[in-house]
Amino acid sequence: IVLPYLVRVIGADYFGLISVALSVVMLFNLFVEFGFNLSATKSVSINRSNIQKISSIFFNVFYSKLILLFTSLIALIISTIFVEYLSKNIVLFYITFGLVLGNLLLPIWFYLGVEKMRSVTVITVLFKIISTILVFIFIKDKDDYILFPLFNSIALIASGTVAFIYAYYRFNLIFCKPSISEIKNQIKTSAHFFLSRFSTQGSRHIVIALIGFSFGNLIAGFYAMADKIYMAAMSIGGVASQTLYPFMSAKKDLIIFRKIFISIISFVVIILFPCIYFEEQLLFLLFNLKEPILSKLFIILMLSLPFGVISQLVGYPLLAAFNFDKHANNSLIFSSIIYLLTVFLILIFTNDIFYVAASVIIYNISRVGFAFYYIKVNKII
Image (cartoon, rainbow, N blue to C red; front, side, top):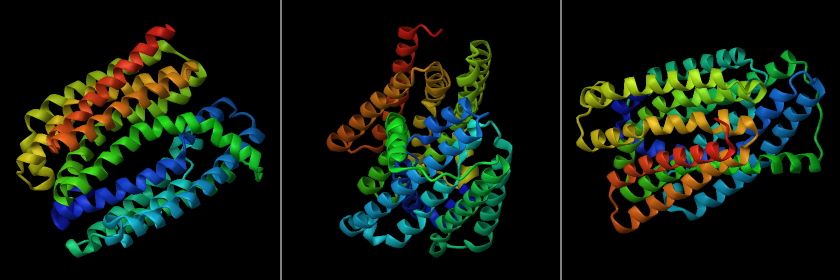
């Protein structure tokens, strides 16, 4: 709802600037999350009947993320001093950093672990609706672009605070301040999950930031528009993956998994063809733009969609659920290394934005290849 309006009002160049700032801040956010959304979700799912245990996990994760938050803030301050692109837009980057604080407070991983997503969904959607209304009321021209990350940060901090307090009282959690050794152990346990999560999401944010630095805000804006639609389609697999992961960890039901897998992939393939065939009309409807660069970027990214969704579904809901976490992580890490190396080589030798976009196809195909290799080796299916 917000994306088409925002692009029309502030323009592709300012949208590109906001997207680059968001990508840089999301790298810090991934560091603060440190893979807890995967490791802690599984721990809570396994121990959900033990209040003392899940209380310990809850506060271990919170204090671990708090330490990582302060570390990230120091890193951002240093970066804004030495990186010109950041120093020129310092206010934008600090306001956007509020999202990291909001995600610290929002224990999505806990609600996933106890499989009680309804409450946190109501809370987050309510505050997102409020921030959406504020966007339409207050953002009227290019000069108001700074309000968009401001509203998003405030909404996430507010929803995170409410969700945190609600989880504490709703599930009768027991406050327990962890020791330094417990925090170290929590971080150590999640380290490999962090590498995989940073490899997948971090590589995407690194690429968007590099596009902004290398091609300017306008091209970054076009890429971010195409990427937003692509990621919205990818969220089909992401939501299914997050929902299936605790279920598969507990039940390991391959029959249910196979049915869901076939249904989701079929749905993705069905919606892909009209999206590509009517791409010009779709992009004009959304952004009021007829821009060849945007159209080409959109088609390239969408062609990688089926491979991306397949890789999401066979990673953590399948490999990790059968206790092959390391193999699930490795498939993400290795493919991300290939992705970033490809992008760096493209920027060095061709500096072509379309080749940069095409590297996403290579990335998703390699993810699928590594995942199925590990599935075959471990004889899961």
